[in-house]
Amino acid sequence: MLEVLGKDYVRTARAKGLSGSKVILKHVLRNSLGPVVTVVGPLTAMLVTGSFIVEKIFSVPGMGRFFITAVTNRDYPLIMGVTLVYTALIVLMNIVVDVVYTVLDPRVRLG
Image (cartoon, rainbow, N blue to C red):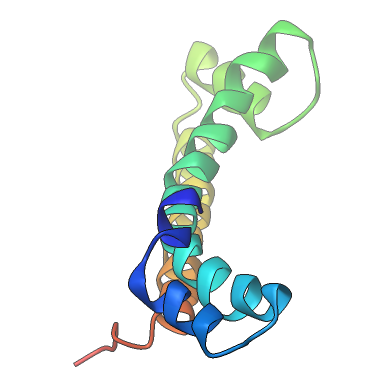
């Protein structure tokens, strides 16, 4: 956000007489959220897959614990099911990130 505050369009908006809150909300925040939204997708994937270890160590019942138990017991249908659920979640989060990115930046449009 600090980088965007020094841009020309922010100085122009302030020179036009817009209030500080309008400049922050309309110009600075909208343009600085792009990189944040881009990183949210992979971070969500890391959060979901990191739960495997936490659930196993602390004996929390969850899909991560079931996945590790299925691997140790060689329960292939359960391994495939959990893998597909996590894959669908990661793909869904990436689609959500792409949609939010197109809402934030109108220059990004699908062909």
